[in-house]
Image 1: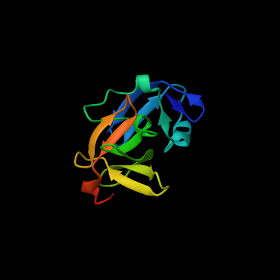
Image 2 (image 1 turned 60 degrees about the vertical axis):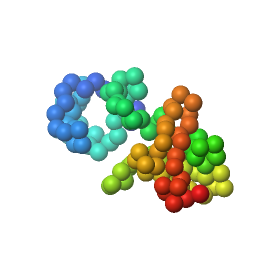
Image 3 (image 1 turned 90 degrees about the vertical axis):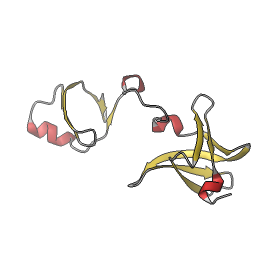
Length: 127
């Protein structure tokens, strides 16, 4: 696991999925732990937990071509986490942006292998 430019091993985990509490190798004082509070933790994808069906890592979706049937819509710029759901921020062919909620009514199919996402623009009221 990496925090900024430093590598650590998680010795112990407690808390919840939303608010985990971890003990890291080499972090032995409250002051050292406090200096890491709120910082992003990164791990290799191979070390990440397995995902369920119809779940993807943001990195797998970013850069995917977005289409509605045979019509190209644009490309995923990033995945946004909003209070109600996650949404794909798509840069359309004309340069405009489109937000697509990650719900089954809007997303027909995600094919990470071919880097394509088939969406239902009619559901979104978009064309």
